[in-house]
Image 1 (cartoon, rainbow, N blue to C red):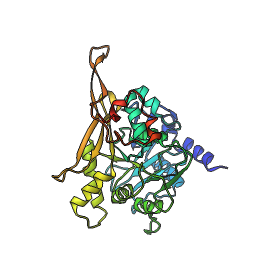
Image 2: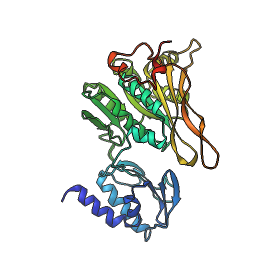
Image 3: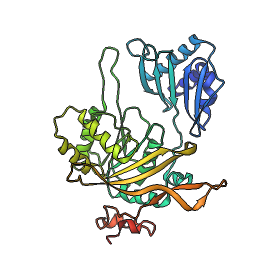
Image 4: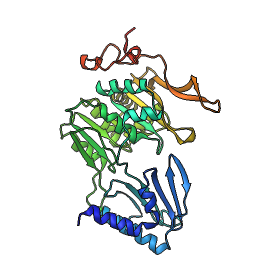
Length: 372
């Protein structure tokens, strides 16, 4: 019997109390705080359900049986587990003593059909003008960092942006837990691995990054930058791997650069701060900020280009798009509508586009790339 069918039967049996939410395509996350306390996220909003397991033993049995498909075991030596289920869903489990009131499970469901960039425009996540600018930026091999908070839509946007990578390029994807579904043909996917109970076999994001450089990538995509691998990414971006992309937790583009700097310092490489900041400024070309806004809408709230570091040793950003009120639109209640708006600033690509990239410039974004 195929592993996928065995997994499906196991879910149907052990996770019967929450199976209807796992099957519901409108539910993006299932959160079990304890046997009789289950929450879900639907349409960006968290709601409590009436689902419950019969008792703590049934709940523990469900957790242990699901984890067997990840090759990991929950015990006192490994009270925290982050894993990927056979269907692609991401599961995180925390048990005592780390979780004070019992075992906690959060399942972020695998989206079987990823939102493409046109659909994100239709949803209002970003404007058509911003979409066209990002198309040119990705095709022209600018290094793009997608920043935002937890569940702000960073991964969905990164997936969508991947469609702008020209065909024929070799892409290496590096992730802690595989979530990205890049919309290209030539993709190599690398996934980190935790150590076993004896501390053996660990493969870190930094290990994968070093390996990726030997795989002859045209572009490198990191699912999420979290630690010392930031320095490896920065150095790769400044040494011939243009057009690379990644995500990072940050509240705004400037914070994203500061966080990247802090994580690079975690690499334990002795590098003067001024030199590191200069490398960050050279490596990252564009920061796209995602945020969860009123009504739990996921919006691109800012797109900024990174300029050369200032004489004062600080990062310099040029805001190309900012979230602003659209004077031509309003809701039925008369409230103003927020929309991503071009600031009038010109892109650093102005006058530097290659002929193949100039073909992507439409009248909607012509002003961004004009030299005067």
